[in-house]
Length: 370
Image (tube, rainbow, N blue to C red; front, side):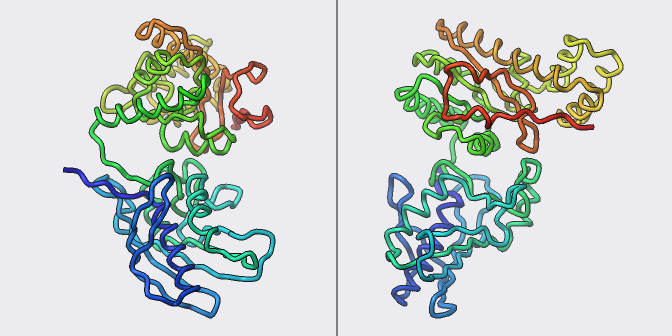
């Protein structure tokens, strides 16, 4: 039987809560009750120590259960300091090993911030400001085994996630879980955002997309498009890294690389369709990755036109797929982004009534540079 565990934000919050509780009580702490929204769980605390009269440090150890997760057994430190109330009760800082965005902000995302607020704010007096610095001693090394840097997360790991539970699932069970989540969202909204992978979630958060409209798809884009149509969703916005999402333009609706690829062939066909010459098509087909192909097209001045065509093709194919298997109409929009999380093409029209809490100024198409 597989064993569930918890995501990295849960252990970071546990360490912070343990440090704050110890700072206030000076009583030994070996476990802490954490609200992981909506459930409460008990998480062990490995170490806690008083550093000064107004600061302390606690350590937890990541346990993702039976999932294959690079953070397994890694220590998470929380340095907590109490000072006189300034402008806010709780200040979160990204310490060593926690990633930073290109603008220097800590890669601590909305779910993690909600966990910190839910669990720490009740412990903070009206006269206090509590500053929490999360430290991942091995964060830089572990980040080298991820694609974080390619997506603009530098110097470490991000505190990212939409749930506190790390649940190992079979492929069939994973699809069923995603379907159930989609059904719950579809009961509330008729316009949804499909985020392809965790990188899609990062871009969605950066765009300010309303969290309650987001559906994570994993590789199961086709079945979930059909599910959305069955549940009378009107429109879906597909938000994904171009090297993953362009598979749909070739009729590939399970994007797992173990099942089908064809990225370069799909890009090459788009180049031919938009007027590229044979030499460029050969260069695209000989490229090592979709990123390399994109760079070739940027240098040739063909990237904008090619990926505009691909975005439109993805939307058309996705709509037809839903119509074929659900026998219901579904309007689909597409936003493609690159490895840096920059939007490179979209057929999402800001003038429509397709609203996600997205101010019009938030969608900027990256200008291809030589």
